[in-house]
Length: 159
Image (cartoon, rainbow, N blue to C red; front, side, top):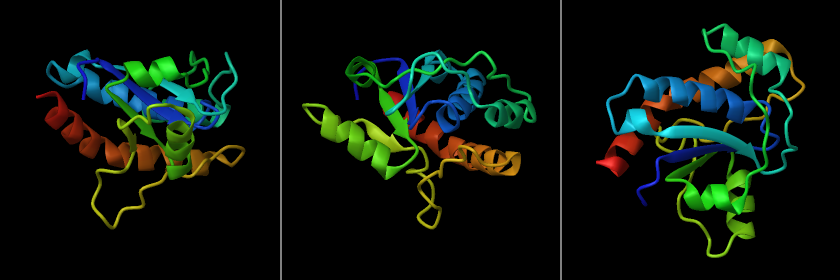
């Protein structure tokens, strides 16, 4: 991988999963030693509008774990973001396929958020959009569950 300090987290609309993942990963990285502590995390969506806030249930689910994402503003994933990123973490294989199909040369730094977890773990994170708060909390917990494996991957890639 290149020497970029940018990590991009991607979902569909950049209002549910990726804002939660951005907040959780940024929080986890802040507790690490450099160079992990120096990584910057942003989120985007493969079909996102510009400037939309995180969904109310995403904000509430994150507040329950002490993190505030109420200032989030959605953005579309751009070729420039992918090119600048050390790693792009997506929620589903569909997100990865959309990105890879739309960019030339095909980027090699795109990974599922849960890709580095044990084999038996579900690798995709379903979209909670429009669902009740418990669905968002479950999504948040699936995101949290993968953070140790992401940190281990990043440690290996950076060292």
